[in-house]
Image 1: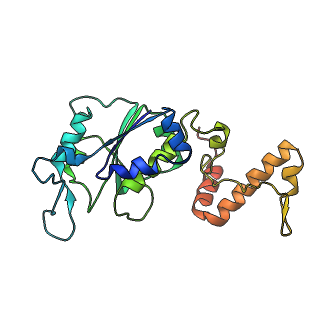
Image 2: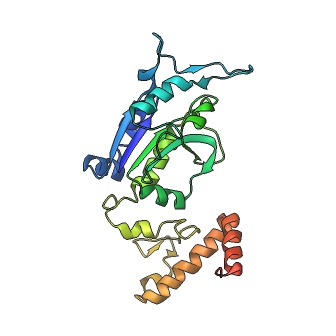
Image 3: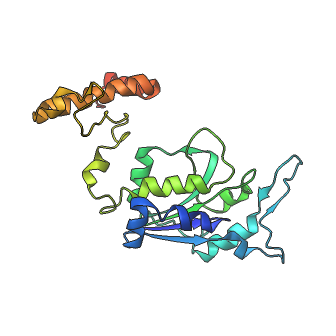
Length: 243
């Protein structure tokens, strides 16, 4: 897997992505991260990458030409010139985009190449979306000062699903949201602390009962914390399998 991150702040990733399991996996070359600065493709002596919006108003807009030249240097074709390889995706971090969900992270983890453009300011010149086949992706219904934190979240969510990145891949298969619900409560030693005990079933050794407990507890936690997901799950159960 190869990640290409188009960013005005490469140092953000040089530091943050070198931490924890993701950093170790990067060092082991289980995937690669290439950082590309669109300022290197600016056409004026000031290396400008943003300008005021047409129509007036506050804020700045990321300019089209530096981004276009940047993507062309990475080998991305304009729409209609070549068909995008099925294992490669071009992504723009955008508050207006599709919200990143576990299912999308799984889909992206099966790719061979992801190029992520970090949005900034008011956004990017909309014509970029006319030139390229781009997935607009958001990490939530809020606004950040730049797309770097969102891109880091996407890389983390996808990279951890690559084989051998996690020490125990089974833990990824049991992640929250893998079955469209939040994960079950989890416990570790000691078995009792300040009068609070680990549920007895978890130390019973009865694997069938443990699995049932985890399923029931996950559903209850989902109902309590994410009623929207719980209602969606219940609706799907009532619909039953399609013919």
